[in-house]
Length: 363
Ligand SMILES: Nc1ncnc2c1ncn2[C@@H]1O[C@H](COP(=O)(O)OP(=O)(O)OP(=O)(O)O)[C@@H](O)[C@H]1O
Image 1 (spheres, helix red, strand yellow):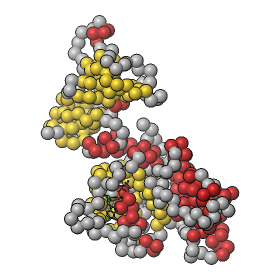
Image 2 (cartoon, protein in one colour):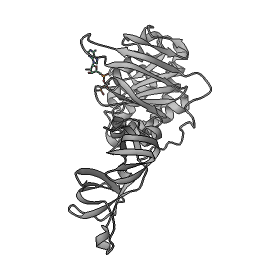
Image 3 (cartoon, rainbow, N blue to C red):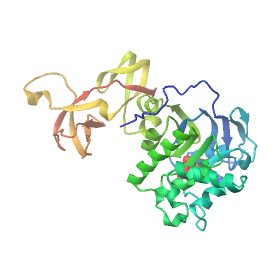
Image 4 (cartoon, helix red, strand yellow):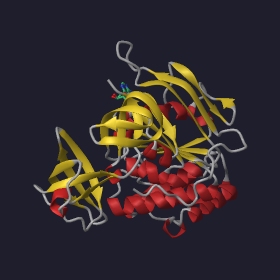
């Protein structure tokens, strides 16, 4: 999986204060039910693109609405540039918001839609700012069109232009790409990220799409049942998941029990290396690309100890071949090169090619 991004800052901890700090945020809609957001805390640095990633219903949108001021928390605080804004009305926070459905006014032109966010400005100053922002998002030629006369991606850029026109230091993006088709989604996402970076605006993207979060964000928080499970760079959360949930939510993985002794562990796959030291019963994550398949030794006329499994299914994906392999009473996902020759029913030797990551304590 490609988790590289050329413009990503080298370190998330920069010299200046974070643009946003959220601490102990808790929200309950019903007194008899558990909170939908519970003790959530994270920071967003100036100009940083941050993502809140998690399955449907885990509380991402509610967290965003608490930051925007559309909802009030039961406890916890929100600071913007060092100033506490927890109880400040939404319109006084100076935070931009882009909704999933864009929420553009269909009867207003592109120009008027963007100008709507600039009600405090008058006359020529307002006009100049609208044109400046439309230039930034590359929509100047469409300024007199109505939203209905634009493509989904263009409408998305109008929504973004409207959100950034007042010059916020932070914009909140609630699943803004979800109604675009796959090809347009990728292109619009890249454009929006480049725009935010160019304008130096910090952003929080809410998404349930792990690939989107990994490719769009400088850092991301993985959320589950109202709580943050892990916060880190895409590389950190993908390669060093801290919990089984994070390992499984960010792509496919194999969860394997083991008995750790320092930098290695005894497992049903034999003795395997660990990415960091651990002791005792552990649960390990091994990505499909960390496993491999080869001909069984017997087929090669060699005798010896090996992990022999049977191919259950194969899935050709162009850039790789993914297998499901039965090994004893365990089913493994193995990623191989696209020309890998095995077919369902074939006996195969399972190879462990990477270090495993400890994602929890074992039984
Ligand atoms: N106004 C409300 N009143 C009562 N319950 C609500 C309200 N808003 C959200 N919820 C509940 O809070 C939980 C979290 O919802 P939220 O929209 O924050 O999740 P989400 O992670 O953004 O999900 P999705 O990706 O589906 O939008 C859900 O169970 C939802 O039904």
